[in-house]
Amino acid sequence: MSDLPGDPLQSSAPGAAAQDIDEMAESLMTEQVNPVLEPDRFTPLQEADFQPVDPAYLKQLRLTLLPVLLLAAPLGWQLYQLPLTLPWVTGLALLVPGVVIILLALFWAPRRYRLTGYCLRQHDLHLRTGALWRRTTSVTLNRIQHLEVSQGPLERLLGIARLLIYTAGGSGQDLAIPGLAKVRADQLRLYVLQQLGEPDVGEREASEGDA
Image (tube, rainbow, N blue to C red; front, side):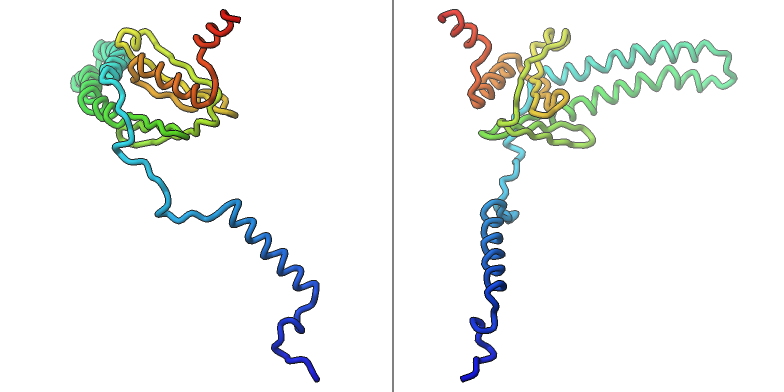
């Protein structure tokens, strides 16, 4: 009796069947290792997830504008001393820097302060900054290699600090959270170190002293 033309077992060669099995196994492996996620399964960051920085950060932003004014004032004075035939040019040279600094202090600094925040979750850390343009920077905790709490002279005067975060493969700091109260910066640093399973410097010194 002749073979039926539509019989797949008779029409498929052994090599083709083996190839089909390999492709099916590879497809199943790919789906397990790198599955496609649907957008509704994502966990987006919400506005309420971000913690605000210390109010002293607003004072820091405004005080950092003073050097710009101090540098612009001598330039305006030099233009004022020039024998120009257009008096409005010298007037603008003296007026514009002061107006720009005032506008930045009144509008840019408060907006920058309000939009600056951080979000620490179990596996990652996020920093949001911006005034006119917003930016969110994220790092996973398992890539963090080093943390520092840094304070400049102005920050020490205001009682705030920056948490500097260095990750694997980075040439410098990958994340810097500004405007943190000194106590909060130390708490965040200690918490991340504990998540990484690394003792704090004080704990290491205490354990070394007991040895």
